[in-house]
Image (cartoon, rainbow, N blue to C red; front, top):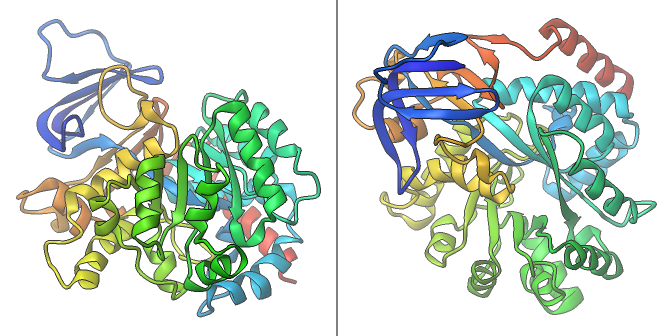
Length: 422
């Protein structure tokens, strides 16, 4: 058992709650949240929080982890040129070993940002899953079926395989996007969703040109088209959702479709600002992601939280928009539930021990007037003192415990980049 004591416990049961207390973990689960007990068990380790905050880890609800390869390679380009001219040609050169090594680099960045799980859409998933299992990190793989897949039936094999692969790995159905996937292939994905009664996910309404193209092809927006063919019959999610209209929002709320916002990537690619407040008011469930480091260029949830809040204030000319409490819930609870990780959404007895410790002793967190607002508006990844996944401390005070040295991970990643970009 591990005991965290003498600090603030931030939880989300019935809203955001912050109380002084302690948290105990045993194996992969949380076994106590609350006050010190009169009869204390013996602990393997006791961690004095010294007034710091312990809370659920952030969930990166949309990413392409191995795209750390493209960090700062293809900047200052709009989305479709970025994809066709820089990303896709170089991705064709990537091997499974590249994905393995680059994923480990991405996981290091997740851990130092307080991220305890990622929702990843990429390729060579055998190597991707192994990297997560080897480091002890939690991930949900999302299939990214598109017109370039040689064998679409592999999606079903992966769905069965990776949902029985490791306690740290699970798999969701999805397509890359309407604009990269034929109707025949989208309908095949719908058949799998119906067979397994499973939610489906996709990049959706990221750019105006994407939406305009879909209307030109089908007479419907991406959201409306996918709902019409049954893609969202069992719920799911849309990544980005920048250019959604009122009817799209109504459908998303009705179909239990999460909107996963990625504000830094959308801004950097000039795609626009997602209408988060409007979606919330329409009853759409919300989550937060970083997207890949090729378009962001960081995997930093603090930056995403700040941006998703302040951009609503600018969009609506209303300082009350983009409230911090909702943003923090998006980053922790919304992300977990969008990914199907309901056991990771809070600090409560029986939940999985995926948690972080936020250092409150740094000047950007003082005075302690409002902890949730401090985290959203003034927090940074430098405040992450500890990250625990599945009951294991993987990051603490700048030191990683993921089974491989930092130097080896950096060397392998740079060797991949040198060969691919030679």
